[in-house]
Length: 480
Image (cartoon, rainbow, N blue to C red; front, side, top):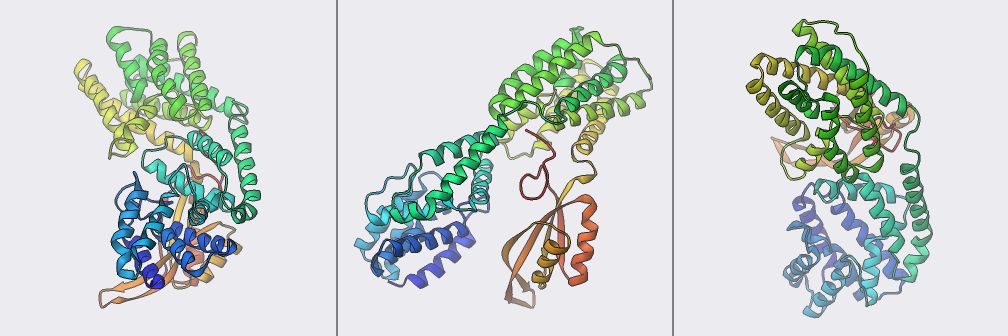
């Protein structure tokens, strides 16, 4: 059996052909399982032949993801049957490898020592200090595949999984059980914190200011001038204009189904905060008086949208919302190739078209302007001048740049292994490189670039907006 040659060949195949959406079940996971299998195999006293079979099973155990996620263990066995004969494996060897691969299917069922070792190696990370980092990769993968809809759902799933999980081998228990219990306690602590006080810090202040700002926008600008906004608020105003129904009651009733959905799709606290916010707006609209400041259509569109945007943004900072459109979009986007922004825009276009039919085209056009201003204002209130930016750096001087970012700028960094080169005149020539990724605030981008270019003037840098960073050394902006 030529395991070394097989490992090099098959890892390269996985690296090139595995879908990029696999944040957890990638080549690094396969390498990790191979390493853990070898470690446990030696501790359990496996002979060389059995150790090679074990590592081969580890090499192929997630290869089914090349085809599909469902029943990938069975597909992995088929791929192993097709590949292994060419590398000197007998049919008996292949049968043992396939049975060992199937032992990793959840819930795990292992009988032989090889099966027990591979099952333990596949979940080795549960009892390691990098558990949080690796489990987050799995969360991202499942979320992108529409198999998870909220962090609360993931939190509960992980906590239950760790409580039920047991390592099969004595070696794995000795190595990982202690840290696994610490990881479980950490999850439970986070869960208590998440389900702890419904309001904390400035939540109440943000929600009250949100209600006042939105009510001010509605009663001082939009409603007296027969203007619309987007989302559920826009539908409520439209029905109010056409049928004369109570606006506060409309806001409450139309948002109610979305609040129920948000309880399951976003979280308990978010749903309760949003319910309170909507009820307060309904009461404010009914009983509080606001002055009509202007009837200039351009000013109404601009400042109505401005104060409505402030209200939405402050509501999100307080952990709630008074417009259920986002919840509906969250459900729709799981089954659509469109982005959240595109879906929200599409739904609001429908509202504006209806407004043009039942009211005036001019009203619909001003409504679009109001919506745009409100959206931009909301974004600024949520992100502020500290909006986070992801920075990716590719440089031949990566070692010096890493040191400068961590020790001089006090930033956390993540390193991706990559290759650089591949020029037109020398396509076959490339060198390995550490690709550096870090997150900074908008105000820090210039300083970071200056630091990098002082080390390597030819460094390749690109930036991207980062939404709602959590963990590490960045602070949370928007609460769910």
